[in-house]
Structure formats: C-alpha cells, structure tokens
Picture: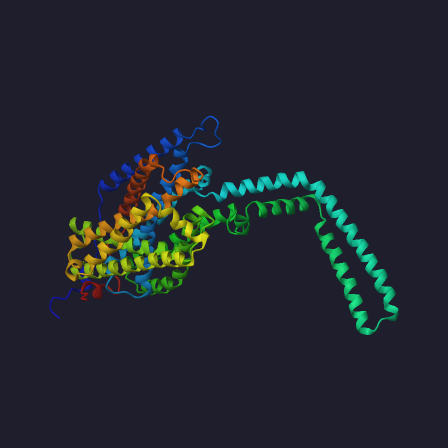
Length: 509
C-alpha cells in the first residue's frame, strides 16, 4: 500500500486568493452592463407614427435573456453535479465537489441579473402572451360594457321563453296525469324537470352587472385568442411572477444548504453533515428537476406560447449538465496552473470528468435528435413551427455546422480516445470547444424568435442586434466570473475533512 495518500495530511485544505482578478472581472462585466443599459435607455424613444419603441430597442431584451440563460445553465449544472455526487455517495469526485458547490452558488447572482427580464419593457418584448393577454382582457372589458344592456335583454327574453315553456309543459303534462300509467307519469314528470332545469340554467346567467360583465369579457377573450385563453390558468401575470421567485428560492436554497453543510464539515469534521447532505440531496432532486423544467418552460418555450415540446426540459437539462462539466474542467485546469489542487487532483480525475463529458455529449445529442424526430414524424403544426423557423436561411446552416457537427460529432470523436481524456490541456481545449458550441446552441434556441416576433414575421434576422448580443454576453460573463471567484475564496477548495477524501485522493479507474 506504499505510495497511497493519507487524507489526514490534507485536512487543512487549500484556500484560494483571487487577488485583483475578480475585481477586474467585475469592472469589465459591470462596465459592459452599464453601456448596455445606456444604449437601451438611449433607444427607448417611440418613433413618430409608431406605438412602440424601435425594433432594435426591443430586440435588446433577447440579448439580455440569451446572456443570462447561457450562464444560468452553467451555474444550475453545478447544482446538479453537487446533488448527484451526494445522492450517489460518490467517492471519486470528493476533491472536485467544492468546485461544483461554488459554481452552483453563483445561481443567486444569475437571478439578480435576471431581474430586468421581469420589467414591462423586457417582459413584453420577450413574451408576447403578456401584452396579448392584457389587450384581450381590455378588449373583453370594452366588449362587455358595450353589450351588457343587449345581453341583459337577451337573458330576459330567454327567461320569459323558459318560463312560458315550463308553464305549457306543466299544464299539458298535469292534465295528462289523470289517465296516464305509472311509466307514462315518470316520463311526464321528467319533461317537467327538464323544463325546470332549462329555466334554472337561464336564471344562473342572470346576476349582478359585474358578474355578467365578467362572463362577457371571458367569452370575448375565448373567441379572440382561444389558445391563450385555454392556457390562462398557467400563463397569467401573478402566477408567472410567483414562479419566477419560486425558481430562484428553490434552486439557490438547494445549493445554499448543501454547500453550507459541506463548509461546516470542513470546520468541525462531524460526520453528521456528510449523512445530512446525502439524505437532503435525494430529497432535493425532485425539487431541482421541477424548478429547472418549469423555468425553461416559462423563459424559453413561452417565447412562442403556441409552441410546445414534451422533451424541452430534458433538452435544456442535458445542455446544462454537459457544459457545466466542461466549465468545471476548465476551472480545474486554471486553478492547477495557478498552483492550486496539484496534490489532490490527478489525471484519474480528469479521465473520469472526461468520461462524463463524453456521456453527456451523447445524451445531449440523443435528446436533441429525439425531440426533432418526434416532432418531424408527428408533423403537427403547433410543434413543427419551432423547426420551420430554424431550418430557414442562415439558421439551417447554423444548426448543421454548430449543433450537429460542432456540438456532437467533433467532441464525440475526440473524447472516444482514452489517452486524450487524461491530458488536462487537450481535455480543457475540448471543454472550451463544447462551451463555444453551447453558446451557439443557446443562441439558436432564443434569437430566431426575435425577428419574427418583433417584426410580425416580416424579418427573420435582426442583424443590428448582434452587437448587443455580444455586449450583453460580456456583461454577464464578467459578473458571472466575479461570482465564481468570490465563492472560490470562501472556504477550502476541496472538502478537506470529508469521510470519502481518502477514496478520492487515491482513485483509479
């Protein structure tokens, strides 16, 4: 057993000092964000003869959403890997688990950066159902005010007709009762009850003016936009805002508790925190899956509320898991290059992380193809519209080059070679490539909706907003980097008193 590392020799841990780097990242990101919102404010004027600000101005909302979602997938992926390692009692990943915890903790930063999305300017530009719902409700109220008197008169006529019909049925049937058999009496009584039910139905419609106005407005909404009306129980302002903050609280609470217990274990060495993390991770997994799935429904699928896919949540999860692992590989290599974690991380850890990168590259491709294949095979208009937009003009070339070839075939072919997964520089280069393809993937998901939505279908691509897309990405990237550096400096870079540290230090696969 000579040569094995002893966890007792690593019980003090390693602390990270970012120095000026995190402040430089914050200055770059903050400066870009200030410039972005200055441009946004400067272009907010409404052109003469128009009702809304310029298309360029409204298109900036898509730029910010793209940047926030890109980095949110990385931080949420950190939460997933933390949950998975605890729930499965993973031993090999103990020395890199703190990096996962720190990455997941940046989720709260991303939700703060997402706050502009809930302002009316960003919100209405991104999610058409908000202004369309408000317009439908307003038109419905106007319709109700205009037609209330007519509707009340119609109900009065209906009631009078129902009362007359009931009186006639009663008169005829009660007269016939004298000579009717028992079976005939049952039938005659059923006719009377049916007439009474018709009268009751009409009387139910007659209420106060406010009740009748509400019915008329709802009826108008239903006929004006049947799809949005059917989804109004889910797609409505109060519930949407509640879900926004629920996602933030749910996702950050998961990593807050897991990372908090992990840090406390470093300080005390008490194994109760190890057991607590294992139990909690198993319970948190359903909460994590629910919060992430519905978040991408609300933020991304609802960019076109008439479209739907049952595989959407899994598709975005696959991208988040894959690319957060790519980011962790890069982060680990950068830290080792700066002199950290050299004694605790070996090429075996890189090999294992490389295998996970390969596994999720395949999983992402499988889900992406399955979603496309099922929608193509079913050929339902409400589903195919997503791909019709993205198979047109430039976006078709984008999908083939960056998603099919770049996102799958290139990393798949390289990661099959075992030796390359044990080379930190090569594996990190593949991870950088994967993140670049993830950039193209998230861009392909969000940006094709911008042109058709903001120009009512007259333009497919708004080339003028490409600059704001990059500017928003740089802004969020700088602040995201600051968040990562900040959490790296809070505590040891690895769980230095975890019971599984021995196993991780000496892992062989």
